[in-house]
Length: 302
Image 1 (tube, rainbow, N blue to C red):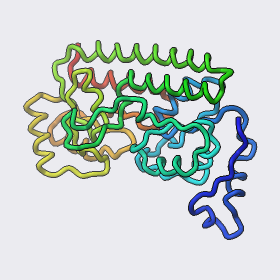
Image 2: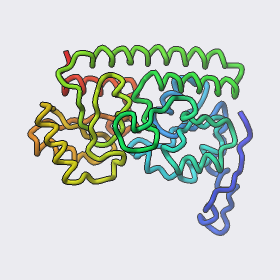
Image 3: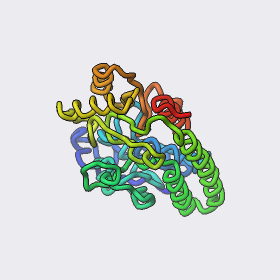
Image 4: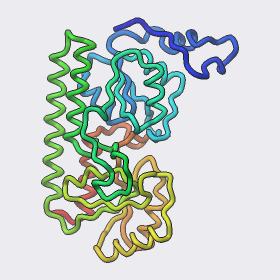
């Protein structure tokens, strides 16, 4: 859609005294600017972009399967994807290094989904933090709003296909609305409503009547204190909780240890921040439905 841009990257010259920023980019991007190019920062955004674009764009997910999105440090090649993209879709604040890469290198349209959805403050679901919870895709209807915004931006990049992008976004919204109804019905009549998870990535599920308790708080890399573990052990026993959930992309050791100590089951609840090698053939819809089935079983839902 547009000529490739040779943009200087911080640190590119460190690749070799005779290698310039321009040659680094031309080597990575030669022959790859046919059609509309979209760069999406992590999996849920890539899923939406692909659904909306259909066959009319190439969508590159900057976070490869198995990578933890929070830890992403874009490579020269991934920065080139941002530089040549007709549209970059990201969420400011979720991946600071991606924010910097977009600010320094994006030359096409830029969509910050934090400007599209109404993010819920962490404090609204009981977390002592002044920040907004970025994990909005746990609410399918908010992800549908992102689909509409992606369609509008693609329509401005590629006006000839604007109607097709809008129709694809409408189909996506239909699927996500159906998923929302499944969650509402599936979690409406349960023996328990408290869920113990590894870290605070599931707060938006509270819209379906769940109460989420976390082991590690906001950071999947933190360590629980003895007081935290004692409180959760007491909660599990007094409320009859049957399952402690670990998650993909993060070590399950702490969650599994808590489950063993309290004599309950350990299972996986996928935050769907990114794909793993085991889930690389799955989709957002299938992963969300697997999460729903796990929650229904754990909470004794009719």
